[in-house]
Length: 320
Image 1 (cartoon, one colour):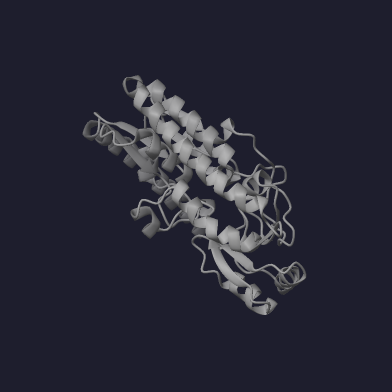
Image 2 (cartoon, helix red, strand yellow):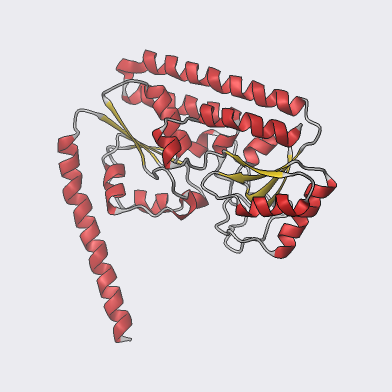
């Protein structure tokens, strides 16, 4: 009992120290960067869309809160992250189970000078669906919505339009520039959509197989495809059961699937196992879901458009 009390005391002290750190450094940060508009996005897609809208405006400081190479489902904000959010002029987040930390954080810091935008409020959300073949997830919350909204081109356009509108409100002097940048980026999204639609139109099969989790339900719905996967979109599991692997192998054989997919930040081991065991010349290939990007992709300036364009050859081989 004494040990437990000691642990609780230590935790309480750490929380107090963190809050003091936030308060003290919050004032310092505001003094050091008072001349720039500070924009903060919790996820990569919104960060990319804001980056496109802002363009080369040197008076804007844009921060990708999660940072490249990390899993959004296991993210836990640091004391410095709290400072970053509190000092932001605009904070954009997705919400839902993937970002259940957001409500707690926003309820514990001073955001009276921060415009808060839950970007999922601007699209038509779908509930988490049972995916064919996927392992049951004990942590999945029944009735929760699928947070991976950006995988649909239509949703991405809505997100960009909502963010551009917010930028016009907080920086009206650059409204014309923001609108032009928005329209230019939306045009690029339309071009990607047309390329993928052409592949889907000429498909010889309509099922995608993921030897991984499958955070692309909005993409699947948008292009009217079918899907089987080892895990659902928000699963934190990495090792499927033997029965799940066997089921997906049989699916590959029965429907003569040429590609088993795995997503970014994954080594593709399960997908390679399924492809190899199927024994029909099937191969494992990575598809970009924009859940996040690797550090290399981030440093190379990859975007929603460039990463979706990389998916073109993968989808062509998988569906045609």
